[in-house]
Length: 286
Ligand SMILES: NC(=O)c1ccc[n+]([C@@H]2O[C@H](COP(=O)([O-])OP(=O)(O)OC[C@H]3O[C@@H](n4cnc5c(N)ncnc54)[C@H](OP(=O)(O)O)[C@@H]3O)[C@@H](O)[C@H]2O)c1
Image (tube, rainbow, N blue to C red; front, side, top):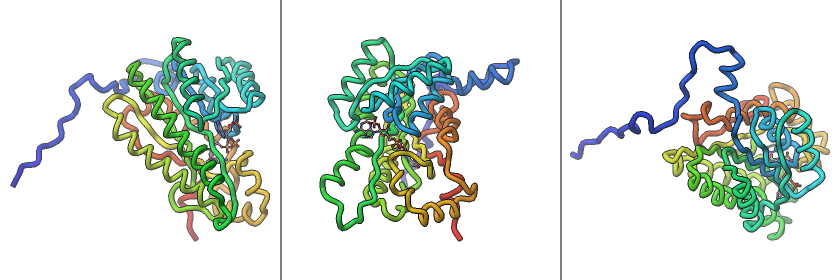
């Protein structure tokens, strides 16, 4: 019978683990652990409600923020807010379903002499078309926006992180419907489940090179992409009565989890996992 060898840990010093500095103030302790000073964050979908709140948090935590999306007005408004709050940011127009656009974004960041320390995929589309009426075009549009753009972005940016030896942090914004699918959103649910699967694959594949990949799973937050679904008062009642906190989420309530997953030092032993911010929705049954 072959003996099973214990897997050896990495040699000391190979993994850049968190070592708390001694004799410090609470503010300095928290800044050292969670702060993003000197980092560059890229928020795909930073022009939207949740991506905007995440971009705002990263600006406040000290990183240079690339607010990425198609809507110039929303993007510039977000950049202005970040700047007003003392941060630094710029808007880069990009259709995240286009490899050419994503490559242009990567080259733009490279030419500015920056790396990609934090990549958040928060671009998303939803639809409640009844299953039997979903066209191929609609199917492709949702899968392209939610899942294929995540594949393209991670393909390009992991390569960029590896080339620069960046201890990158990648965050996929998935959904409470990534596991057991919610009613009325079958393709959206499938696209989010696919994202969660890719998160786990990439986490396993690139952890040894210092790149950590996790999912951030919001519950229900009113935004443009779900506005139509939330016009249905019965659905709203069902959601609220199923949420122990008894409310929708506010975009700011996603910021702490987004900072945690972006922090190099808070996540040295965290990869391939999902952080849920849903007011208890997924833990609730009758
Ligand atoms: N709100 C919720 O309750 C909730 C819950 C779970 C998960 N989520 C997820 O959170 C993410 C953000 O959604 P949100 O709720 O904040 O909705 P939102 O305000 O409608 O934001 C959607 C974002 O996706 C971007 N986007 C869509 N297609 C794009 C494309 N082809 N290229 C680049 N950007 C594109 C939009 O940017 P442009 O219009 O500028 O292109 C916008 O920034 C989505 O992935 C969504 O699935 C939301």
